[in-house]
Image (cartoon, rainbow, N blue to C red; front, side, top):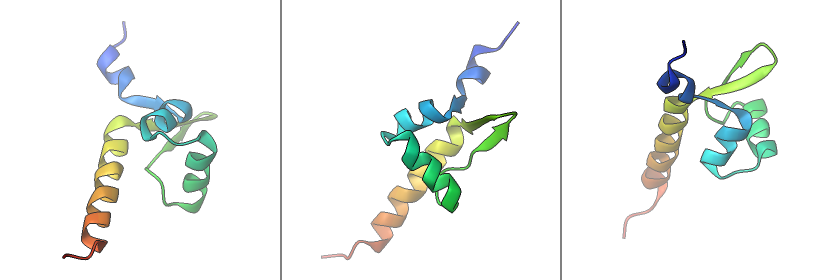
Length: 71
């Protein structure tokens, strides 16, 4: 018996790229540079926790808002 809600929180590289609306190659490159969302290897696969993707997206949004000059 599997818990579907727990399975849905783990995303493959392709699924994470879809969520981020970016090519898989870009997500791999970000991972290589250490600037992308946190992911981990499970066997041969790279997986991402959905909450880590959401946190990374929010960090990017916040960082952009801080860097933006006020008018």
